[in-house]
Image (cartoon, rainbow, N blue to C red; front, side, top):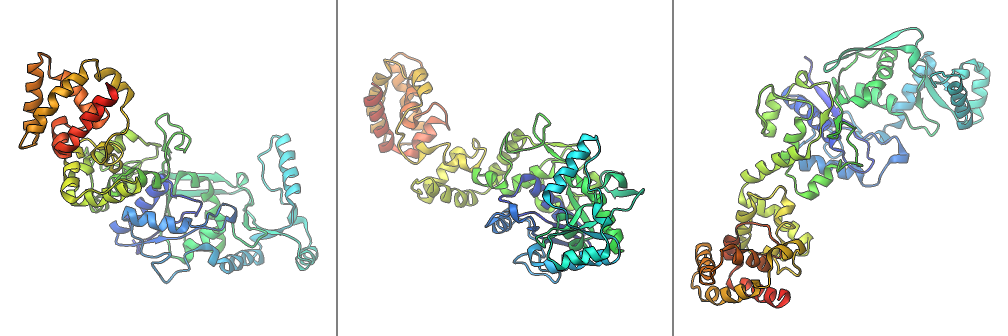
Length: 480
């Protein structure tokens, strides 16, 4: 095998889709497995969809995920520039070359003419495609219109009566009849190339050996094969990845949940957990192992083990994987990740010892980093309200009396440890002739404002005596 060169080529349209992250991951794994190069190329030729700042966001997201690219914006490389809007002359030169060789042609049709053409074809139940009326123009008329500055595009002249075959690592041999392939536009009237031309020219000039991309591009591949043949270039190896699906097997979309990698970053999923989860959306190692480091994925990955069928994006599975990574993460790392989240929520950052206590209480309970903050705000600040369902269930007319009874012995404790607090609470319950729950449940509500959370006595020990007594007093006064 020649030196492997693969590319991830997103469009800067706002955010990185989780499907895009999977494409980037598979390209990265394949490149590292074969000691090749992983290229980032920005395909920004559709200026109507361009979003300011999206390129920087893409690069930042890839760095967050740990997918370092060898060539691309900011990384250098001798095949650049790696942003397509900076390569326009290259595309025009190649499009003009095909015109000179009779493999492409100028077309001057207006948008109204194209829409009328499509409407007529649909009325006749024909597959809408360009009818090649521009080929009836004489050379003199073409030159006159070009000289006059008439708006025009360059279209590929698709060969007639041929079968275009695509050899795909994942899907095997796929064939397309040329009569079903439109004479696609290569160069638009604004001088920008279409995806098809820019993609093929760049892949060739950048020495890309393997094109690993989503299934949605499979239908475009015969157009790309024809272009490679027109230029006389060797084809890369193609591999089209299966679609990502919602649990109901519809295509993964924002209508049913988060699809942007940034959403998962903000919610506090660890990058290695998200990558581990996404790696299994189409690929498997052939056994029952589920947890892999990035280096282990590099070692195990192969395109031959990527399936054709759509892959279900299960939040339940992602949460399970992330919980496993959180449990094995070091306390120091978790603390570093939690501090900025506290600041973002306007909460004071506690000292290292206290934060260590929070992590100890929440590590086995939290699904995401965000839950170390929003899932236990009562560990950082007094609750200002009480959960209504918890209040109805756990605060009875006699609850205030039990909490009044428990406050003095709690205050008298010389050591405010979990076991000491538990012994004190159980003693008060016994003295009042009630089950321990009659004291524990309103006590938890008073201290945390909710009925859920880590162990009550461990939580109270972390909060400290004065905080607990203050909150008990407020609850008695507020709830009555």
